[in-house]
Length: 114
Length: 115
Image (cartoon, rainbow over all chains, first blue to last red; front, side, top):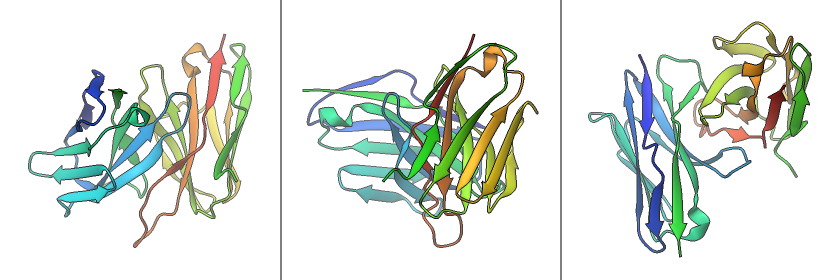
């Protein structure tokens, strides 16, 4: 069966350090992978998209890598700030699925302490 | 300006009742979605409409019926509510197609509590 796994334990990190989150998947042929941020009581907000033929994408302090051999994406927040504290969700769209059908992981909570 | 809006934000009701949640997007997108996020925070897609046409219909009880009167609106009607329907329901929209980013824009969510 298809699975998307993210670390269920919260990631506690000191301000200024790099937070690295993992998204592993099984039984998917992903067209692309997306990362979202979700704050308590709010809807997810899109951060980055990486396609299956791309290795790395960057946006400001965020970096995403995608290894289709390992079936893994890593999400990095460099120079982390307390405002980065949130839950981060990865989501996959499979090549065999309808356009826009995203399957989400359960998310990893990040807590950045000053 | 709110991009994707949902009403109501909170909905508390008794088992067996029928309720509706409304969603509107002003982004000009062609595709809209309903997601359910349960107590374990798992976000699962329920339905998707593209230009008022149903394109994704996951394994959802037929007590749930989406309706899209136009491409800017996607409502969710739930009949005979059950305790297990308690969750946060999110509406989202996107502009699908070649050359687009395919990012989805989410509404603020509707927290449904069934007593």
